[in-house]
Image 1 (cartoon, each protein chain N blue to C red):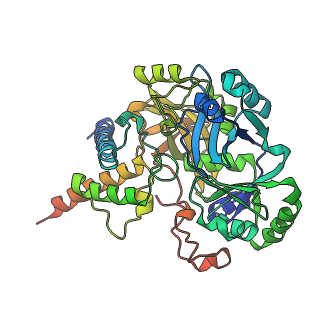
Image 2 (image 1 turned 90 degrees about the vertical axis):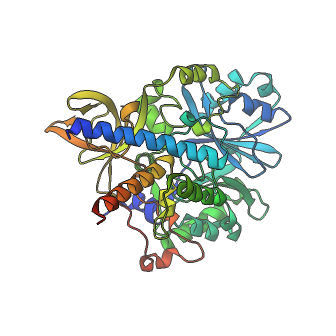
Length: 106
Length: 358
């Protein structure tokens, strides 16, 4: 795979995952914003979307039920839930891990 | 790498900041809400003691001021960064309409001494300074403390760490300053310069209006490219709303993105993908805490994502690679500090995550 093809593939995956995470946030938190108004680097808590700890639980549940991504107990949850892009990172990393474990399964 | 003391204090201890860049106003009267509502990009339905992040825009949709609006004591407080006091008052009088004429506007600097405190142990310092009430403050809240409850404490955050803006009535200021001096040694307090704050903003990937104004970036970039849409209620009417909505409906082509690199880069340097320009460097700063260079660039939206190592930029010696990142570019220690468990004096015994996680 050439570098350009690898990048194109990464960007497609990133955009797709960003769209999924935006949709997940809108649906699970009942946000009254269209997806394109949720900036990728927008903070989820405090400033930015201004979410609270109950919202955090909603997101963790939605990640597992909607995207099959489980935030393990030893995951740095505060870091994972820092921003929209941080969530995208977590989802993409989880997909990569699932792919690797599928590939090495007997 | 050893960190410069002042930025290290912000990231690992307690730092002091003067608020010379902040214009603080008190708005009172029946038209105060209407006045702010005409100018604020964010809806300002704030509860007593709540703070809202917002912007004031120019009619062409460009950013004029970085704004915090707080409700308190039956009126509003406005903390503004960007314009001078005179320019801010002129803006209010130009765009506030009749509501500006019917609103009492008082500059807090006339009656208050002010300073900012930030860092993962800022809560401990402010507790020692102003009393335990401040420990219960949530992010973006305001309380009045002190013997006559006239000292204003805004919990606003400072580049991802605990942060407070404190306004002390001038008749109580000498006492508070004396206590502050006594506490300074105990907390190894250092004063942040404007340059430190700009570095902290780039490390954090957050908006710093002084930095972007100095770079000239705000002449072309607005809230959409700068990822500040959480501060905008697009359905509302405010100064600059028409231009901003026009831009939103017609789409923007670029978005800001954080990155790291091995060397400082000239502002305005093209960012290249296989020799083709896909963006521009806005700013880079050496980060003593990370040990490398952190930066903010403007990339074509297609490429404006973290996790890319395919971009290059020119330095004198040739091309260097840049790595787009999800901000913040370091771990905010404030997230790991618990006021029930930790203390500044015993911080070295705590098992905090490293500041840099790659």
